[in-house]
Image (cartoon, rainbow, N blue to C red; front, top):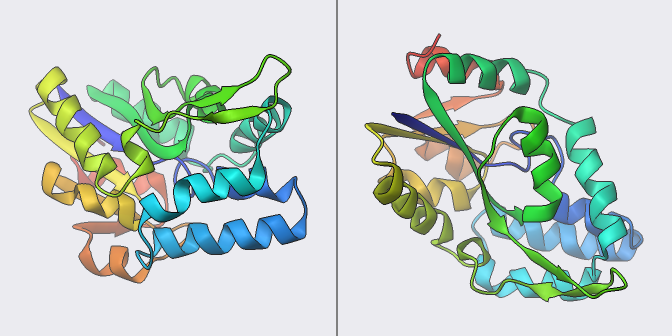
Length: 213
């Protein structure tokens, strides 16, 4: 079995879910959150430092999360469905590993036929208001994605592992995978461009790179 792991935000979909959750709260909240997200994705600030802070600012309720879940699907990367179908047909097992939120990403994963999502579960009160997040989830801290990938490798025993993503948090997993493919349709981050084994701007370039075409 061969394993391919995709980041979600700015990779499988054009949006950054945390930024869209913030956008609903108004322009000031959006600007503050977007700046923190970009700082983390560019590697300028540790994810640990900003993860809880962004959610405390936004206080995302269940209705807002459902709205953003639909946005992921509305803004899906245009070649994602065909590419994942081709990878599955070639025998690849697909997992989404994201620093986003489990309940917000799941509908996109279902749409893409991906059954496994490793992300950050949110908690809600009975009235749907925000009640926090799973602070033990690995993506809430730097080094979280390689930690998840190491666990997936131990569980699934793949013969080969590929990672696809746009951010420095994805690049952190490079030592845990056989091939790291940087993705730049929506965001070209200098360090990812410089250090990725391959760099693509469309997901349909991936099967040829990994011999799944």
